[in-house]
Amino acid sequence: MKDKILLLGSSGLLGSALNKALTGHAQVLTPSRFDLNLTDLDALETYIKAYKPSLIINAAGMVSAQQCEHNADQAFKLNTDLPAKLAQLSKAQGSTLVHFSCLDVYGDESKVRSLSSCTENTPTNPQNIYAESKLLGDNAVAEHAEDYLIFRLSGLYSKQDLSVKNERPPIVIGAPTSAEYVAVTVMRSLERVDRGVIRVHPGVYHLSTKGDACWQEFYREVAMLRQNRQLLINSPSLVTKDSRLSMDKVEDTFCLLVPSWRSQLTSIITDPKDFAKAVGQH
Image (cartoon, rainbow, N blue to C red; front, side):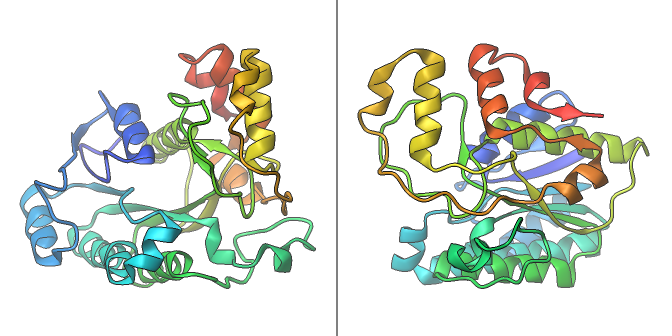
């Protein structure tokens, strides 16, 4: 693992899981929004030049589609301008950049539903400001960074909060995936790259569990595993399931054995302390 890591967005769902997974593996810098305003690109440049991280992990951004519609300027600052600046700085510093994106960039699910699987080469067609701003950020990273990885994620949940409190939006493409699984998979994969166990080319990779499900189906499975019917009371309305994501590229490149969303969920609920059951590698 790199000797000094800058983790942006460490207080978010994915960022918190990454922070926990990275603990003890390296010096991890986790500036809060009060320490570093991520929309102030000059301050960001000063910070990175001062601390010289060898690895930059960008888990920051505006992830609510509704908030992006209401504050488009902020959405483009965080989802487009921030990763673009990080790409430029990572290249100048000789750092590795890991950036997280979303599957919404592929657009209307009805367009890709006819496909047997959605690959990293499926044409993008963002349908809202959130997806558009994320895609522009992806493109900027690919254009300006030299040593980079872009992981496109599907609907994330945390093992710390598997109860239904509010309605969740439907998953457009893919399967429910725990933030902990993403964090541990990325951390272990980067370690293997550093040790020379695997060779990875810069690019876009899907990182999700296998299969597809709506949130209602997901929470029905949670209720069954926990033998708690109360979890179904506020479950979201049924939505149509959509195309499966191809995990071929990430499995082949990182030598992973990606689990189904059901098997991952079962392992997390039945043995929440055992990350190894949620992260298969060969």
